[in-house]
Structure formats: C-alpha cells, structure tokens
Length: 306
Image (tube, rainbow, N blue to C red; front, side):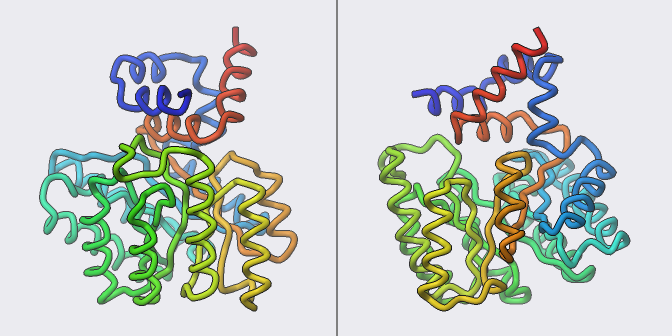
C-alpha cells in the first residue's frame, strides 16, 4: 500500500511543488542525488572511482514532449561525456540514458537519432551507454531502438525489470544477442496484467532471470540492494565458474554504501548509479517507494530539521 501511495505521489504535481520548495527535503535529495550541476556529478564520480567503485551516471529528467527540450538533454550528455573524458574518468564511468528524455514520446526516429549521437560520443571518449528501462508502455520501443543502436555499437547495455511478466522472453533474446544486461526489480506502478504485484513473486522472478544471465549471459549487471539476492548472485557466479570481471553488482548512489565498499573490497566489480540534475523529484519518490528504510530515513531527516 505504501509503495502504491508513493508511486502515485511521483506523478502528483501539487506534491512535487511542495517537495521542491521545502527546505526539509534537501537532506534527502543530497543523499540520493549527486548534485544539480555537471561539476557536482564529476566530483562525485571522481570520489567513487578513487574509492575503488565504478559509476553509471544518469542526468535526471524524463517524458520529454518538446524537441527543443530533447535537444537540451542531448547537449547535456555530450557535455558530460566530454568532461568525463577530459578528466580521465571514462575507464570507470559510463552513462545511463532514459529514452523518454530524448523524445521517445514525440518521434521514435528522432529519439533514435539523438540516442545514437550520445552513444557515439561515449564511444569516442572510451566509455559506453546503458539504455534505462521505464514503464511498460515504453518497453517494446526501448528494446527496438536498442537493437538498432547495437548494430553499430554492440556494447550498448540493456535493462530488464524482473517485475514484468514478459521479461523471461526478453532476457533470452538479449542473451542470444550477447548484450550487456542490467537486471533490476522495477520501480514503476504497473497493472497486474503486465507485472507481478507481490514482493515474493518479484523476488522469485528476479532469481530465475538472474540464474539465466549468470549461466549464459554475456555480462550480467546485478542491480539490487537485497542481501539475499546478492548472496544468490555470488553463489550462481561460483557454480557457473564466472570470473569476477565478467559480471558486476550495481547499487544506487546513497543506498547501502558500506555494502558497496564491502563487495568491492572482496574483489567484485561494483558500479554505483549516480543521478544528477534539477529534475530529481520523480526519481527520489521512486527510491523511497523501493525500500521502507528509505522512507524511515526521510522521516528522520524531516524530524531533525523540525
């Protein structure tokens, strides 16, 4: 119930205006978002890489409905990639891209052109792009454009959400094409017709998909903070004889940082998903919805300020 309420809040303009203007929300934003500016995220990324972690950077913003806005997003990613390259950070930092931010809802051919521009710029500075997955209405379009981009840049990564009922078939197709795959649980409010609703169902499907990826996948990216699923991933890697440089764990910026460091200290590749920018509201609320502990942190932050 709490998760459904929070996900509804992520699309509520009134709540968003209140949250954005309230000084009480700032401590929470600062925990989960690397900052508003390019300088902020480059500094955060440099610190992560210096501590033995990797990074995947997301410029926040989605559901673009105007071409001019999509062009601004492309320009921002090109500037980000240029800075990462200039700072010598691309060996450990990649970028994540939401296709809805570059015009997916306006025109798919335009979106494909813009996404390809970002992928090509990433390749030019020695890094890669992973296409984020959003709500289920965009899944087919995202996978279609991913397949097109991967013809020239096969290193471009995919995301699969374990709560979607279709994901087993999508995983098999991505395995056949030797794609890098980030497996996450999913963070959008979806109808029962397309998505598992219960935590146990989602977790069980995550474990099934993870087993397929660890056995046959090209490069699994295990995006979870769940201790049980992390332990399962380690055991699957051992059983399948996977070398530690053929898969990685992924966690969100500000979530379980000690576990991130522990996994890295044990010799694992650990990548932190690092969001930045001013359009943080929807991202933040989805993070609160994912874990009750995040809601508790938010409540404590508010209490400490009042």
